[in-house]
Image (cartoon, rainbow, N blue to C red; front, side, top):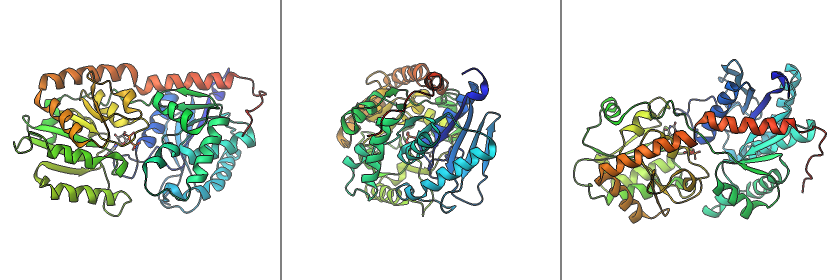
Length: 422
Ligand code: UDP
C-alpha cells in the first residue's frame, strides 16, 4: 500500500445508518460504532465510504461528514423503515446498487468492513465478485440471542448459517470483547480468524462536565441520589430488573432518590411496547414520583446525564459489548452491570463498578445501594473508571488498531487464494 488512494474502505451497515441523529430515531450502538470508526479512520488518512439503506425519500443520498468520510444511502427495497428480520430479501438489490455506485465513481473497494449479519452477506458477495477483502463485526450473535428469546424468528436458520459462513471465510472477524470471541468459538465455529478490538467512546465528549455543573444544567438537586439507565427499550436490556431493584432501595422513601430511564422513542415506534410495559410497572410500584422517562437523549446532552448520576446501571440479560457502560465510566460515573458478555470486559469489579448476576433484583439492589450510601466509594470507583476508559477505550485507539489490521490485510498479496467456504 503506497498511495493514499489505496487507503480506501467501505464500511457497510445496511440497517444501522451511521449518519442519523442517534437521539432522535431508532438507533443504537451499531450506528455509533460505524460513524465513530469511520470518522476516526478518516483522521488517519483512510477514504471512508459508509453504506446504509435509504429508509425515507427525504433522506439525502450522500452525507459528507468530513473531506474523507461520507455516508452513502442506497435504495434497496422500499424507501421506508423495514425491521431487520425482514431485511434479507432486499440485500441482492443492495449489492447491485453498491456495484453501480462503484462503476459510476470509478471505485473498486479493496476492503470492506461489514456490520451485523445482514451486511456480512453483502460483504461475502463483494468478496466473491471482485475479491474485496472482508472484515466483519457481528454486533450481535444469533447463536447467543436465540438462546435467550422465547420466540425464534423465521429468519433464524438463515442468520445462523450466514454467521457461520462469514466466520469461516472472512479475512478477519473483529470481536469487540474476549467474551464475544469465546461465544463465536463455542457456539458458531472453531474455524476462521478472529481479532479482539474493542468498541470505543468519545473521551472528549464524555467526561467534559463535572457532577455539580451537570446537575445545575439538568436542574437536579445537588443532594439527590441519582440512578441512571440509558439505552433502547428492549426486553433484553433488563430495565424491569432495575426498576424493581430501585423499588427496594433504602432511599426509596427518602425523597432523595431519583431514577432516570433515558432512551426510547415516541409512541408508535417498535420499542413503544416495552416502554409502555416499563411505565406500567413503575406506576404499579408507586414509583412515578421518583422516576423520569425523558425519552431519547441526544449525544450532546448525554454527558450531563452521565455526570449528574451517582451510578449508571446496565442490567442487560446479554450484551456483546455495551457502549453505555464505557460512556458512563468515561464520564466518571461508576457502573453497576450484569455479569455478562462484554460488560465483564469493560467493567472491572470493585475498581470501576460492580458486576452482579443478570435478572437478580436483590443483587442489583445491594450493589446500587452500596454506591448510593457511600459517596467516597462512588468517587473512588468513578475516578478509576474514567482513567481506565481513557486508557483502553478511546475511538482514536480503536481506529488505530483497525487501521493496522486493514493495512496488514491489504499488504498481503491479492493473489493469495481465498479461504475455502464450507
Ligand atoms: N443512546 C443515545 N441516546 C439514547 C439512548 C442511547 O444516544 O437516548 C446511545 C448510547 O449513548 C450508546 C448507544 O445508543 O452510544 C447504545 O449502545 P449500546 O452498545 O449500549 O447498546 P445497543 O443499542 O447496541 O444494544
